[in-house]
Length: 506
Image 1: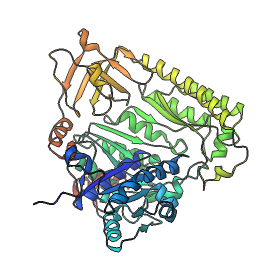
Image 2: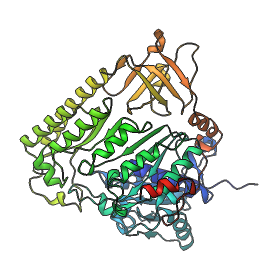
Image 3: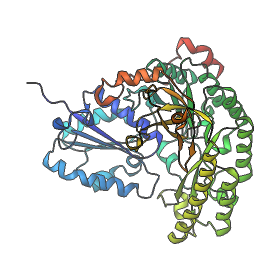
Image 4: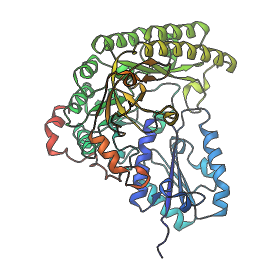
């Protein structure tokens, strides 16, 4: 009789960096012989997975409450089945360390942001020693991309170009938890892009805490623009995105590279945080509103159809009514396609946590609602401006929660707007990962409707390697791509096929 496979469940909170790290954690566990708990038929699943991993975020105020609430929910399962193992990784683990085991003694493993590759060994050690294992490294020893990966998508992938951050924003705890910036050599990044394309990936997002400071470690301040141009030469790579740049380090050569490189998408996420120069100074953001608006103007001069999105913080300590009015002014001038708007929350360990003049909650809430209302109106007006255009959509899974009711499919346009589109009667049905051309008929506040094909408008489908990869993945557990091996380590030479590009970019 064959023993039931050991199962895992990786639960992710936070940013795209965490999502990418979770793909690495899943790859490590599958390489160690575990299978995804969600991929098993419901009748074969236990009450919970044999290993539950929380990959945590520490940016938001309620991150602690969310983690300990989730751990509390698992305690009865652990009591009923002591063989279940619970692991906590990510930024909360890096920050709280031994506190996690003290507050939740049923946790088996705590690991940090710099040693996700240790997870399988720590689980084995905890099982053998019958006690919790806590391992937190203070600096990165192995770049995460060297680890095996179980990607969520067959046709889209992430590539880390750097980890860590050299900025000192007073509201942000990330540099303390992720460490100083470490850059990968261009040849290794390009080798990974080629490897992803070989697996059927047609869209890649370049990841870094501050992508446009890429190159600081090897002394080339123009390295990011060069990397974008080099990515444009990777055959079969149809779409390149990146997140997130910092306005203080954003240079015109990056704008030129975006405009002149065909597969770099006309979308830009540029965090503003505040429109008040006084607040920006208190945040240590090292740019001012005039510079920020100037960058947006130059982007739109060279990329007229670019959709620009942002991050905004309301209620930073000391923010006055005048400061907030400045934020409203800059947001109105910026014409963002959308914005992630947050109410400031105290993060212990950051300089802002102990600043005087913390803004009362009711004031923050009122300002937040006004800012969201303004941005929603702008987003709606910007989306209405796309009506009548033909857009290229990368068909995706999970983007349209109401697709079953509306009989539409969904995906992202080149500018990253969410598009819900209709398939005409008798029209070819695209697969996730395929590209379609459709006419936009209505711009809603947060998405586009493209029903033009129902009245004789443009509708065409281009089958892609991404669609082929999605089709192949349907035979894999959970409908996800098979685990791929990690890339060479930091000290390894670049792949011979791209050695010239590696030399050119440092």
